[in-house]
Image (cartoon, rainbow, N blue to C red; front, side, top):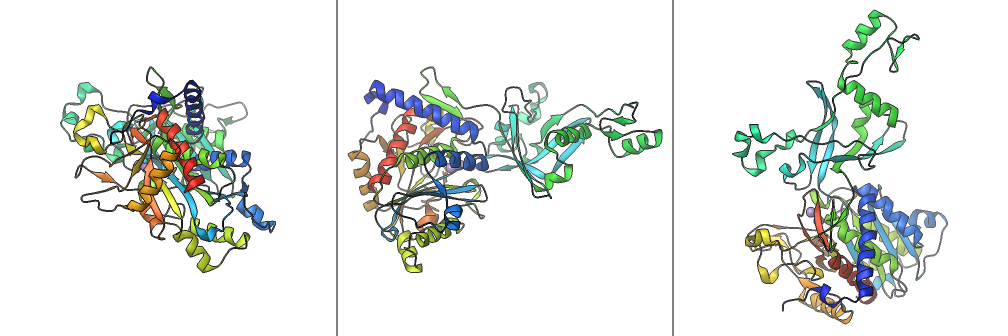
Length: 483
Ligand code: MN
Ligand code: MN
């Protein structure tokens, strides 16, 4: 039952293809550090591959037919791609699903404050994080500022090597006696994940014109008034920078979505370059491989779907999470444009579908062998992972895929020489986790948890295996063709 290491069987051409896919994936990771950026980049790639926007073709009254490639997005944070198959959609779809949100620190709505001439941004962490891992490392700010005039300003600070970075300070070891006696979960408190962003006060200098740093400072009275308003503060200088660069006022934080993420690009990991270290493998490693399999697919029998959804890390709620009606509504529109819609046909299509709900698995870690059960654990280099069930404490909260579906998938993977393995998330009663599988399973479709194993899951920098990325992309393509 033990699975072989996939690297053992690769030809030179395959190794080349593996590293090429690795480069493309790193590029995607670097361009997509937020769910919005992932959707944007995925649309760029989709359009290059002949995909068209559903809202556009609807306006044109286009008649959808087999072979058409169509995408639809929800609020710029969730995306559904469809490759129309030869069979009517009522016969079921082959669906690849993954999530594109990742653990991070979200900037609060009223975030900016000054303490002892240092400017800081208050955050609320998103998803499950070990808070102590997010201090003393370079962070970048990514997001959007929506202004009252209806414009939306995109922000990325800290990725260009010429950019400054920001970050959260940690206590020096010399004074950390009390801190080190604390439990790891309270060593750094959530409310103290405040990001240092500046230390230089705005200086009011009188200019001949009476204008200084853009502020009126014509006479002593006005100057005193300016100081009372805090114009000599560090936050004032930060606000001036934000205004100059992004035309942003402090009040605009109220309608912004800015995420603090680890700064810098994904890189090869290991002296043999067999792995990739990057921010947000969970779950862009499955999102990208699903997307790339989808984009290269040709002439599908059943309609292929790739769903990239938001909010998985916080329960899949909201309009852009898997629990929303976005996918169902989009499918209804599409079936209508294909002349295949009725309420019953839609329900049949959903119930007859098959899905790979893809998310990261825990890779075996020799440093923490005690939390794994070795026979039922995912290993780097042994290929794509299938988790018949996930859950915790007696499989609670799990979607348990049917044995018959698992058998059908075994056949597809083996027929196509895909390296694959099965796994649970750790030892029984050691913990556990959930994904989006149980949500689409509510339609009565066949769904299984699958994906790619990672080390350092939910840490600022996670690690994945290039062989597993390659095998998963091949596995997803085989699923779209043959499921
Ligand atoms: Mn995940
Ligand atoms: Mn996760």
